[in-house]
Amino acid sequence: MRMPPWTPILYDIAQALESVEDPQTRIHRVLTLLEAVVPYRCCGLLEAASLLSRPITIVPMPPEQDNVAALKHRLDKMLALLVEDAVHDHRTLSTDSAVHLAVPIFSLGETIGILYVERPEPYAETHLAFLSIVAAQLGAYLTVLKAEAEKSALLEQRERDVVFLQIFVAMLGHDLRNPLTAIQMLAGVLRKIEGERLAGPLDRILSSTDRMVRMVDQLLDLTRIRLAAGILIERSNVTLAEVCDQAIDEIRAAKPDKAAIQLEVQGDTSGCWDVDRLLQVVSNLVANAVEHAQAENPVLVHVAGNGDNVELRVYNRGFISPQLIPVIFEPFHDEERRQKAAGLGLGLFIVKHIVDAHGGTVRVASSQSEGTTFTVRLPRTAKQRSV
Image 1 (spheres, rainbow, N blue to C red):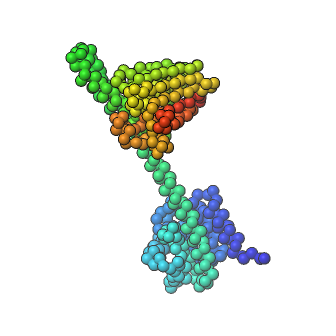
Image 2: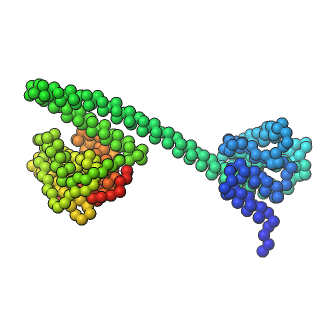
């Protein structure tokens, strides 16, 4: 079966639009190839909005600038007619000196340009059909070009937003921490001077400022994670048992009237981790367990070395709703638990990202009959990364 003579031309036009050349060169090449199926004395493409560096492309380019301006003015008027009469897919226009064919270029139902040819001789219906096909090809190409430009603009805006937020977070952390640190220091000095006389109020001040400092730290961690900067890990040799012992001592001192905490250690619990970040993990898990435990039921903290990993388990008799389990490591996941703990609801979210940054895993299991257990598994050594 013999191939129609215009098929290779349409194929070449499609190839030109997929080439590695810049957009303006591609469009110029398409208009040049168009002459083989739609003969013209002059061909022009005018865009309704400037998607490219030049809103109008003319082949061949008139030698005088006045002729370019006159053609652009003519195409502007034609484009206005096509936009107004969107029912018709094409329009044939003529002047005293030449015959014109002009068809709209569409993008997602919107007229974004006009493809125009002229010559002294009349055009046939087949010429109009070919011109419409090429206009459709150009419309698809310009649609992709527009989408890529919008995507690039969004990415650039996001990068600017990230830089702004990073600066804002740094300033926020600095400006909030300074007054809180001053309050802590002054309250501590007064506590030593006044002794028991103002012990109660000063202890409440210290406890409140400690909580506010933790909230600031959590907000900063949340912002770093959301900005994809992640939680940075600074590793050193440490034993997880010592980290747990320190965290438990601090919780016991801060919450003496809460449930008892029992620590069990089994085997070698040493590894190369970030001490401060692991303190956050243990403190969050144990403090949550204490907060939601009954006074008569102790919180059990079990640490065990197992080959290349060390495992931490925190258990209490509390119960977590099955509906909450899938989202428990998400921020602000549960308003009721957040109010009870007087926090921001970010603790477990940050715990997960700290554990992830160490190359470990954290999971939770809960039932009314068995209670709740959070299990953290940490490799003793891992490549440093941020999450």
